[in-house]
Length: 125
Image (cartoon, rainbow, N blue to C red; front, side, top):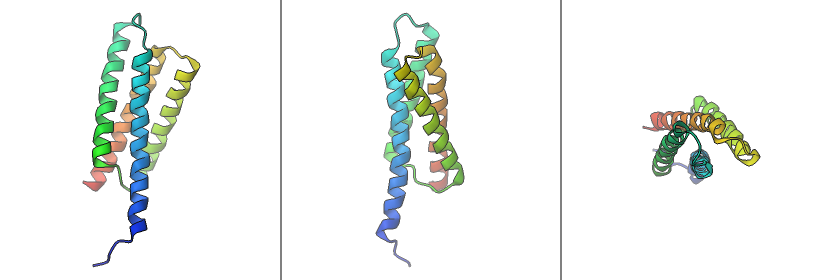
């Protein structure tokens, strides 16, 4: 039986950590938007933000516990899509977009986070 080289595992861990970091960023953006949401925002927006925060938190916790290693080409495309939406949401927060506009980006980011988690877990487990 061939023994794995240490640097092979290091690459896998670094890849997994990078993916988990994206899910952490998604969670932190969701948390920031909930924090920035005004009491006068429509109830539907506040509810969507709260539900999205719950989903993002659960995804991050699961990803941090399980890791997100995998070499599927699909994973890289999902990773790129999540990074792009996270960047858009971050820019929106910085530029003062109204929360009602940001909630759609947040939900899309969390959908990409779910797809990334499922693709990595499906491949490894």
